[in-house]
Length: 141
Image (cartoon, rainbow, N blue to C red; front, side, top):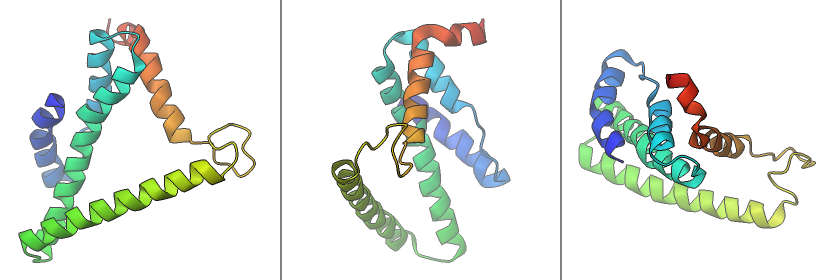
């Protein structure tokens, strides 16, 4: 979480000025926790969520504020619209996810007949397992 707090402002300024996001914080957070707690993929996923995804969400939030500023929308209504939209979207997403897990047979399995294979979930988990077991040592060394 500290890495998200530290990197949000410099990466946000670069993104605001150039419209190019500086990549690599995703890998940096994986390497930090991979060295600190090797062999613990759940800790890796939690640290990556707090360290990188928190910063990415903050940058998206401020990007929306920048667009609202250009459109001359006052900051307080813009903030409350963002909060309400976040609550509604999160609630709907959790409801749809709960419905899918209870009504779609064999969801997230490779042989699911409708193609619900959950690629991003597998990618997130696989990356945490690979890096948490120390394979990042070969990249850095």
